[in-house]
Length: 101
Ligand SMILES: [Zn+2]
Figure (cartoon, rainbow, N blue to C red):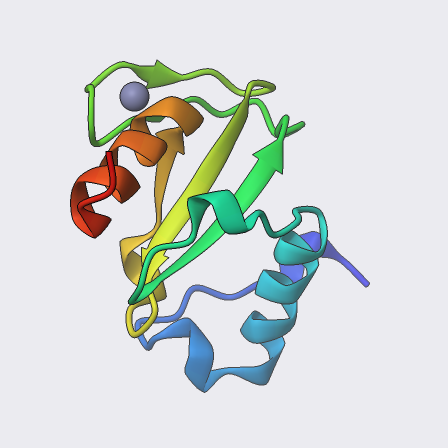
């Protein structure tokens, strides 16, 4: 089974069982934390990403360093819009959206 055999596809990932399996593998590495729950969004906490890829937090615009614990967030109906947030930035967003605090 080669990782290089993955083909480029123009269609959306959830239409492909094969691609969905990849996503499941990815999500198996993270756990749920209700502290970060927000209606309409899927949220996963990532305790350090071994893939050395840095992300930009959509809230503060600063980098989310690979290896740093952070959250991955996407709208329930569009996993293409996945974003990596600092935990504290997402918590602020959740509080702002739920009107608590
Ligand atoms: Zn941030």
